[in-house]
Image (cartoon, rainbow, N blue to C red; front, side, top):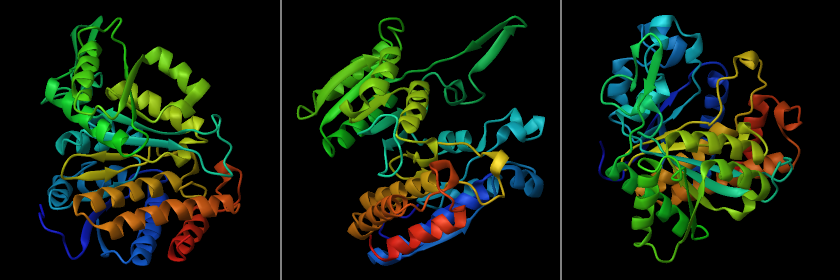
Length: 363
């Protein structure tokens, strides 16, 4: 793992399934254009196998050799996976993204929801970030050292474990407070402490404890069921939201749709030393290979990866590159160049080329 600012940034690129082989290269094209325009150090992309293609070529959806290579990298782009279509013996294992999150302890899943001008948002004015604890909580596949955290003591009983630990809650709370401090200084904790007192009540209590370290950040909280209604009614009232794993997954999908589409919802999974850019949406096998997919979400995720690298290496050029990507997406969509899901006629490749051109032009 490099500790000094490298001459190039070596990042993995894993295409994934379905529309992955179309949208991930589109993101690479845009990121390369923005990095060059910003005068940042170039990216050395390292292709690695994943998903159905990796099962066919290596007998594993995420081959051990790919994991070993990722150990040497700062981060990577991961395309969507379609694990439901894998052979039964592979479906029984952790899916590739779950395995990567668990293996590399990518504890923070950062999911912004912000509308673009020209895209009809169900909730106008939405501009928030959901910070999702990514390693435990009610997602049993990440709650145990080995196995999935689900078991059946009898044929008629199924049990899933939800795990909440102080170290994990403290680190995600600090991540959320730091993010809120750099935005509008407003953090909302989402929980269900009125019913799940010992688990989500623990989460809420520790967030409040950490809040004492951030007196400049306004802190409030809502129950998960109430929060779904508040997002629909007044999403513009919220800035940064922190919550446990499953609640965060559900809320971020809702927020993405409220902003206009899951097709524009970016996402970053990060630890202190590595980050994985991954769109919030799935693999959309029904449109795979037709040049119809919207690459906006994975492009936005890539911009988040550039920004994370900029913070890691104190490199303002990478922050400029990330800003160029966001600006180029906004310019392109505002100009009417959009994929079919956003009401346009542009194909995946043409849309990516337009965004790359806008990034090169610095707009």
